[in-house]
Length: 64
Image (tube, rainbow, N blue to C red; front, side, top):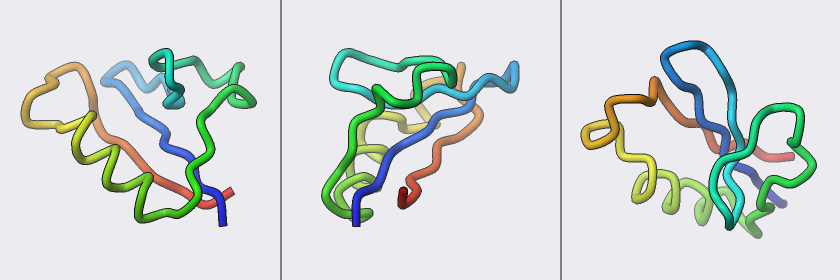
């Protein structure tokens, strides 16, 4: 089942992961679709590590 990664910043805005960076909620259709939820989680842990990036509140990998 395909999955996507969403990221929330401290202002409460939601962004979606694409190959070219983050896109806003209005462009959700451009979000990268991963083959499995495990792959989405692995990428999110590596790329959006909250310990290193102080601008992010959190991330979520979800099945679409």
